[in-house]
Amino acid sequence: MQKISAIFRYVLLPLILLFSFLNPVVAGEADVINVKGYKDGDLGWRFDVTVRHDDTGWDHYANRWEVITEDETILATRVLHHPHENEQPFTRSLSGVQIPKGVKKVFIRAHDSVHGYGGQVKPFVVE
Image 1 (cartoon, rainbow, N blue to C red):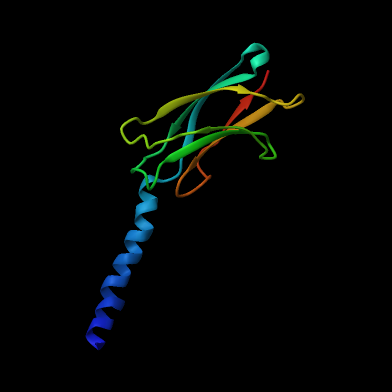
Image 2: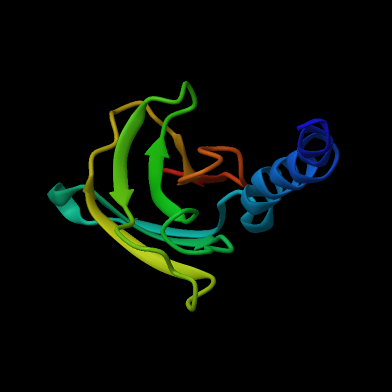
């Protein structure tokens, strides 16, 4: 019994901890690397956003990006419905984004299923 406890404490537990911390770190955080946008008349704004994330499958992938104001009010969300392991970086679009009067700059941030927010955010000047 004591030998099993020692094996668990000194061999198995460190390996379990190592793999539980290593897996999320491998893919890192989702980064917004490019943003293109234009006003589509009365329909609002269209954004074409390029995201980079080392998706590892359904357990860790970039699952959305958002258009936000400086105070982090979410104006629009583009849900990403599946991992993009074989398509990096990837670009997805969102139309009909309404930007309140007086807002001169918005920010686009990405989110992943493990880290949440934290990767590179890109500003976009609204003209």
